[in-house]
Every structure is written in C-alpha cells, then in structure tokens.
Length: 339
Image 1 (cartoon, rainbow, N blue to C red):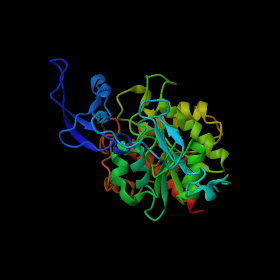
Image 2: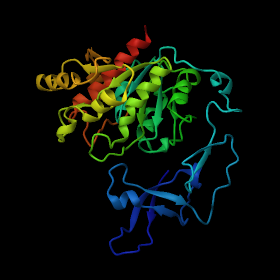
Image 3: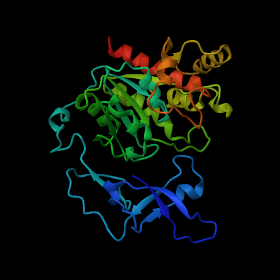
Image 4: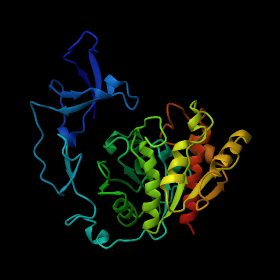
C-alpha cells in the first residue's frame, strides 16, 4: 500500500513529505495519524527503482505474531524475516502433487535478465496459453513491489517467488523447486524466469544480478525443460557494453550456462543492429541454437500491452529492439509448447 508520510525532519535538507510503501503482511496496515518507522536508504542514494521510502514498522500498533501456515523463512536473519509456506512442504495444498515431481516434461522456459522483459514476453504468447512467472531474488524481494504483476491481472497462471523473494501466489526454496511448482501446481505450458523489479550491477562483466540467467538455463535443462533465451538486444542504450547483444547476455550464455538454450533473435532488425547481433552471437559456444523468429504482429501486441513498457527509462518507441526480442522469445516458447 502507498502512503504519503510527513517526516520528522532531522536536517533542513530533508523533504517535508515522502512517498512510502508498506507491506501489510509484514508490518500491519498503517492508518492516518499513525507514527511509522521509515527506511529512506533508497531515496538517500538516489536509486531509480520506485523512489519510495519503506515502512519498517508501525511502532504504536504492531501486527500480530505470525502463526503460519508454513515454516520456510525468507529475508532470513533480518528484522523483517517472514514465514511463508513453500508449495512443496508438508501440509501445503500442493504437497502431494510436488512431493515426487522431478521433471518439467519439456516445458519451454523463457529466461530474461530484467523484470521489464516480462510483459513483453507475454505479448508474444497467445492468450490461451497458460504462462507462469518465476521471480528470482536478484532485484526486489517482494513480488508486491511489481506494478507489472499488479496490472497483468489474470494474464498469468500465477507467480512463484523463489530464494529470498516472497509474496508470489506460491513460494519455493529455489529455482528448481519453483520451476516444478510452475509446471505441476500452476499448470503452466510456458514459464518466464526473471528477477524482480530493479537489479544490482557494478558496471562490470560479472558484477550483475542478471548473470543468474545462466544458472537458470542449467536448472531448466536439469529438470527436462527447454531453455529459451530472451536476449537483451538494443541499439538505443547509450552504454557501448549494452549495444547489440548486451555483455550481460553474452556472459550468462557464454560462460555460466553449461546446457544448450535456444537464443531468439527477432527478424527484421535494422541492418546495422542485425550485423552487430550476429557478430556478438558468433562469440558464444556452439552448443546454443540461434533461432530467428518472425515478428509480424508483435509490435501491435506490444503496443496493446496492459503494462506500460519501460526499460532503463526507455519505452517501446525508444528501444523497440529490446521489447521485440522479448516478444519474439515468447512467441518461440509458445510454438515449442504447441509441439
């Protein structure tokens, strides 16, 4: 829930009010007139995602102690650690379905390194194909922070949050268990794996949370799924390391992913960008399969997305290639699911 909070200003430079988010499951539900304890770290650092302070507690009206169900702790050993019920633990509704689950049955899984790819991938998948979203913990940890998930409504069969991420329709301890939950509990024909909103990066090859895409390729393959790479392609990003195929995609698929994946390139890219993409992909191991996917109708589908498309502050018209690549990966995964 979003609030406007009047600050007890400690310095003249402090603003009079800030926008703040409270997650009622963790801190209770603030009411007008309540004192709240805020974490303003992201505002102080000028971080781009959201621009919110976060409510840590309503000290005069604390929420009741959690009583379950479940015994899996996320945000472990922090003041806000939360107890959730894993989809496959004893007593959970899907325990009998997942207790012996060991295979994805060839389910295509689209892998993307940014949360912004999720609605674009969905634009490439026909509406009658059930799609699940597996949210990893490289970005925001609460699924509740994602405006995209809130606005997608019933388009998803459900969300599974894994690792330290929480707040999905189902919880899982790791990517492997989360993939099995997507397939066998949510009934997904296609799953999209991406970190939550935001990301952590240092501007170096390895210092980026999205490198975990390569680890997800290995997890999908280990469980008998079909990894589909949504490549991060752009000719609009001002940073040379992200032009053509981003160095993050090249690292994830070239150095981290030990299993083969289908790497999707949208047809019809501008000649210069297409040449750059082809050259970048030639640097990858030949275990991967580069797949060119037709893009007829995808721009219209992207324009009709219920979620405002935005990556690094750029929309569909500013960074068309990025969103088109994600939609093409969705289209390819849907075609695999139909075979």
